[in-house]
Length: 99
Image 1 (cartoon, rainbow, N blue to C red):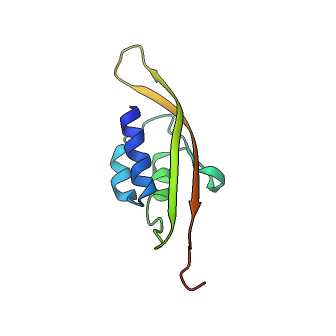
Image 2 (image 1 turned 180 degrees about the vertical axis):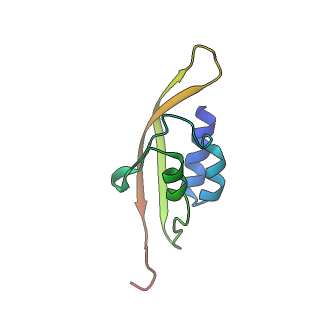
């Protein structure tokens, strides 16, 4: 599970959101939850997919988010798991080259 989340963060940092989508659970999975700083909390499959659709990737923009403190809980049956990570990071660069 930690490898999947690390792959997710790498793809996020390089603006490859279409490759992120297949890493998510299936539509209808209960308990989906994602929070992206102050842009919102997403609690269903469709809202998470919309976040990862059309996210801009401006030239010159640097994103570096590092994951820390993984908390992974595996279900008793060993078939599913849930995870929680804190992230620290920076974003810099131009979002509009005309500026």
